[in-house]
Image 1 (cartoon, rainbow, N blue to C red):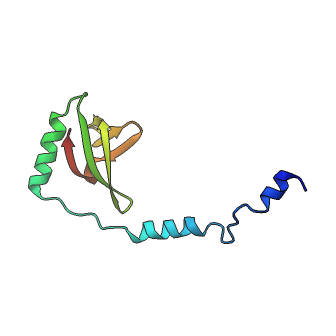
Image 2 (cartoon, rainbow, N blue to C red):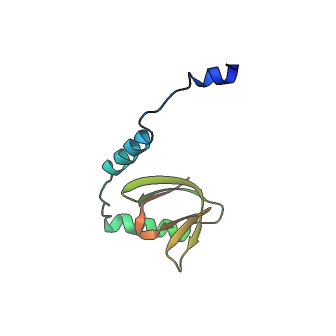
Image 3 (cartoon, rainbow, N blue to C red):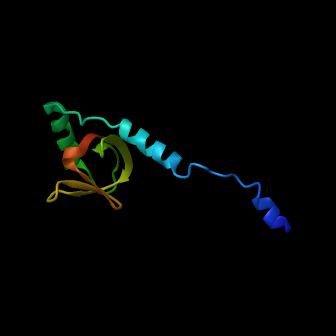
Length: 103
């Protein structure tokens, strides 16, 4: 028996192929949250920040997506007509923004 064939005998074997992915997906779904409501003060504060942003500003945005709160940091472009923020290829709807911070 060749050295490589002999080594293949001792490779790890996953008898329940796909189980780890299924468990991760189930855990992700279990951690889902309801979208929280914002106060009028928080909405006004975010509106002022959005209107005052410049091209070179770096922002940290906490947003709601697919049942989870996520964060993204970087330079963004504001698409006022679409009511969205654009980070590279990620578009975030204004209604999904929970918090904005200029860094």
